[in-house]
Image (cartoon, helix red, strand yellow):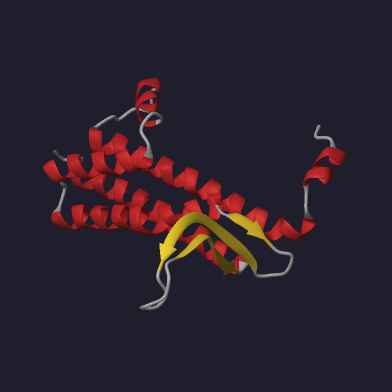
Length: 177
């Protein structure tokens, strides 16, 4: 049983709504990775869920899984439309979802009032106007309503659902071969 006093010492109630939403970002991201694993098993013809299959998929990061899936699917796609859909989904994950997931998980969040602000750390040199000296910044602050985090959770979930539909369709299109 958890020590309630220990939890109370760790919790900052002002963060509860954000903590829950960011927790769901992590949970849905893990489910997205499982959907990629499932599609890999189907495309590769690994028809059983064995320890061997898991030993392979758990040791491949998501970016590499997408590259492998695209390469193998390009060689033998069940249809051009199916491959184009997979390519589009992988591009969405790589260019839109993954960077935002990293921001939500790794940025510093601070309040105390809604909307909280995400602080993205990184050194950047810029020249705001011609004939002005170069300026250095070490972070960018972005006010982020909790509703935006929940909308992102829905986006990850939709990507997982698309992957699962794609896996089902692949299986149906290739079952007769």
